[in-house]
Amino acid sequence: MKQKVIRIIKRLIGHRILVHPIVDANVYDANENSFSGNSLQDSNVLIVGCDETLMRSAECYYKNEGCYVVKLWQGYRELTTEDINEARGDLLGHFDHVVNIIIPDVDHDLLHTDHTYNHRDLERVVYQWLQVESDYLDKNLQRSSLHVVFVKRSMEYLDVVSHSIVSMLRGLAKRLLAHGIVANGVVADEDIPMDAVMQSLMFVTGKYGEVIAGEFINLKK
Image (tube, rainbow, N blue to C red; front, top):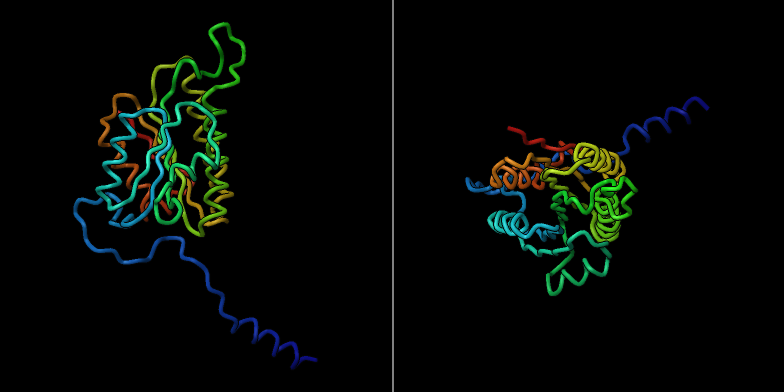
């Protein structure tokens, strides 16, 4: 009996278990113009948002990183899986990275001006987007990433909405890691230069973003 137990223990100890590294261990070619350590080359990126200027800027930065980029101007409407698949068009493969660019809007504040509840508030919009996007990534890819860029604009309940969105993604990120999805983001004050926002976005989307899963880079002056 004793020998049998010893043999079982030896088999368990000698059993090799392979796991994915927490940090991207690949060695990429040097690129001094890259803000992602050149780790985004040939990635498919979907940019979902409600601000054309920021979306165009993000598109330029991702293309500089060697990505294939599709923009989906969503306004503040509900997102569907069909929207994502239609946006993909003739792109080869699925989207590796999904980026949400969010700008507060007074029509989507937490409450209406008469202090009644707004059923299309920004929190609800972002929650619904993340829900659909997480499902898409989980079904189609083993390793991917999901991001939120939140640029603050004047709104009565801005602080409440901002903290809620940050907390939402943090909680979601804990669940998504088990599915190979890294979720993080960037929060920026209105007076932060656009280049600083975009460079930070490249950083969190690339290999460095794995170590700050569930966290935000908070840009303030």
